[in-house]
Length: 413
Image 1 (cartoon, rainbow, N blue to C red):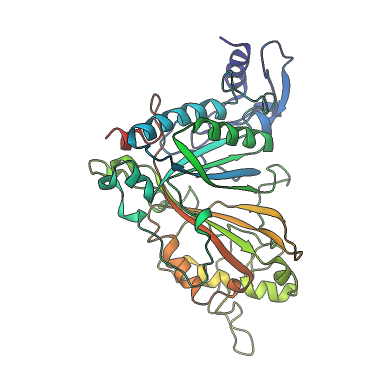
Image 2 (cartoon, rainbow, N blue to C red):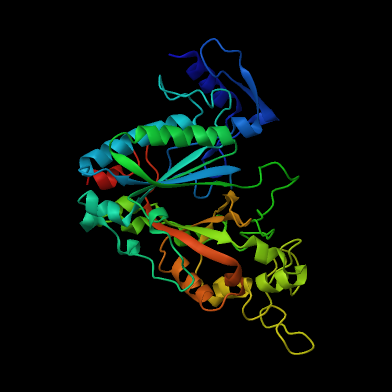
């Protein structure tokens, strides 16, 4: 048994406590020690580094996990000639690897050492299957209809090379080196079974930067996620996770899972920043300072959609983003938005290649993302300032039980 394994177990036994969802292992007292390798002097960790997320559970981690400071999205295609057998072996390797990484442990003799003294830092690794995976793994009969291709939207300017994919992996952590370490390990473990199709990097505000938890801001400076459904709501699981009633059908492998829609949305920052604060707020329908509706109150106050000004015009314009995307305007359609911002450099013309890696979770994308995006596509004032450049839809199985790997119920059905 390695010394760092012993130290890691002591760490989790000393500072770990099951969170409300049974997934989070957090540091008590704000600090703990972690030995990064045999003979090393233990490193003192704050609660940021010591906090771990359990790999096994009813749902995969990275869906309801609080937003992390940095993340990577990576899609793979199965290699030519690879099929169900190779896919099963790959998911077995990746699941074992993710379990070690999320516990903050080194990954064996081939470990790069990048994250030796960092602790788990709330790392999550989440796996999903794209529509084409089922063709290549000879599992078409088990492919759910919810994985049918998303409809085309008039505002789309999609790059096929950066869209879709057989397999999708979402990595998030509160330490950039921990996230990169996981990305590199996942890529290397793909071996000859799968090839990288595309990869994207993102970031958020670091947890703990504010005195109390706050809704994240995007690169427009707007609060993003105000109307997200909350786990405390009675219908949360029904909206976000595939129901257990799926059990006993050919789709039972997806029970407890979810669907992720992934969109790379470039924000035309130069155009947006030319608007006055007042005009920006009219485009969104909310105050920029605190996210409250233009009709007043706080961030969580309901939109007063019928309220008018003395001149008879709506306070929240009829094309405001908040109005058009509101669940009550879309038959109750709801999705859990869990994005990262991105910045991939500045072009020759001086414009930043920056925006939002939009990720939303729902039990059924045809009832979640699609109706809302259709409505936004028809008249959202924000559309003039954004560009949808890549897209993907992935079925994300439920969490692996102890001794299982993610997707086992599909691949061994």
